[in-house]
Amino acid sequence: MTKKLAFEALDRTLCDIMDSVFDRKKNLSFGGKVVVLGGDFKQVLPIIPKGSRVEVVMASINSSVLWKYCKVLRLTKDMRLASGLEQSTAQELRSFLDWILQISECQYGIVINDKLSVDISSILIILVLQNPVEDIINTIYPNLVQNFHNPSFFQDKAILSPTVENVEEINNYMVDLLPGEEKNYPSANLICGSDAYSNVDIDWINVEFLNQIRCSGLPNHSLKLKIGVPIILLRNIDPAGGTNEIGADVVFGSNIWHKVFITRMNLIPSDTIIPFKFQYRQFLVSLSFAMTINKSQCQTLSIVGLFLHRPVFSHGQHYVALFRVRNRNGLKILLCDEGLIDSIRTENVAFKEVFDKI
Image (cartoon, rainbow, N blue to C red; front, side, top):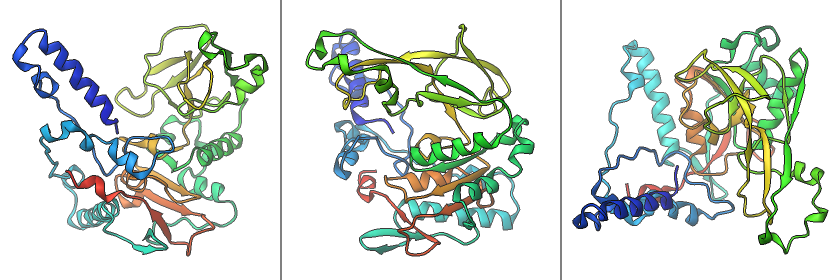
């Protein structure tokens, strides 16, 4: 979800534009223009690095001064139930969707040690036999080695996890399982010269140090790929020609089976924790056998495996993960958190106060 500051900036921009044309509209919200916003407060809220619960809620659009000018319209017809399903199938789907909505609104579960815990049906549970990573891979991607050359095998399925660390562990494990030559694509990083960073001694910042820096939204320094593996774009880009390209087939979305070529791009990370600016050049893609829950927002999948090595940690993550799948038969959950009281219960995070102004 976009922060309220972005909408307030748009409001001021439109007011300035309309002020130069129609003086009487300068005091109207968004310059008198009708603006349609779409979103779901049950999903992940704006990301505030190291922010408190209050800061996250206050960053949402319904905490903005503009919210009083908004008219809220609600969707009332569930299109998943309007597709001519048999009565028994429709009832099962309705029960599943009601369960997800109850979780999103904190109406399902019990409070244990000041934390809301929800029970997971045994039908959805993946039993941990030996290696949790291997168990969820065998469930979501059965016969992986035999099928990975078929692009349609990876359509509409993914393993989701709250943390980047678990996602990378699963992706690396899976790419190592596959046959074929492995290619590593290293990034090219360099310091941006600027007098603004005169208080930083850049002489001690070598290439090895730059390669170890991790920033949100950027791939690792070394991108490990094999022919046939699925990848996901980390930026909305218009791929252009170049001397160093990765060829890919689109297997999900409106341009399915279109061939694309993805080039390396130059980026300057804006992470305020880093006391200097540096340029990062890399293919802005990552393996997509598994992805973070936040990254999966707005996608609809047929098969989803939820890997919870630890419980979700922010508002809406549990709801987003469960709602990615079309029906209950396509959802499997693996719980392997040693801190859990039992093997069928996990924690849920939802900020009830964010719904107060809707």
